[in-house]
Image (cartoon, rainbow, N blue to C red; front, side):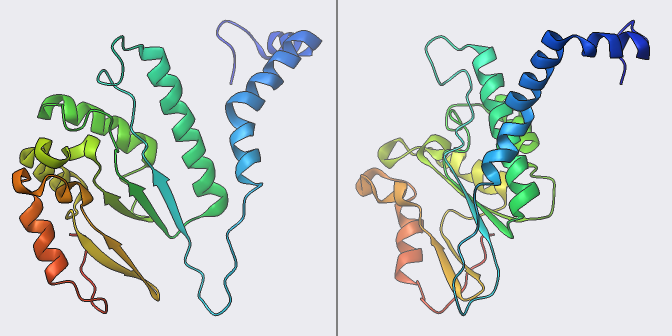
Length: 216
């Protein structure tokens, strides 16, 4: 790749400068290598008697948007997005999880956005976390920033979450010999005024520890 307006000899001459080369190496280390370095310091736990099925948990990605701060600073959001994208990419490259679980608050202002703005924010989420890739398996859990909590729950936002991520708010799924149980805890706050309480209560009442309910 050539720098604009420069031939290969000029590029090599540019790089040969010790100070410029140092800056290029520092830039590469800070923007690329550091993510891979720290991921390579990690390892999956080894548990005797079980098969190899690795689960990566992404907790509260809460993508920065105009609802985050009184004075929204776009460069801050861009830096945070790049950081998450590179971290996630390095984890997929070196650790190759079989399942990724996103633990709620996927967007900071998910419960506030109208459909048009929500779609814009979702395009950002999809690009960061590679939603369009079939592998690894992905499971999505709703958080209060996605649908509200207690009496502030927004049923239309809850339905939008389920439709967008192809999931229910309460489900049980088998991952080899382990049952992952997801419960919409936001529905158990201020139950007398919570429009999602009935759905969650029915799931709890009909729960079968030996059963398996698909996320969607």
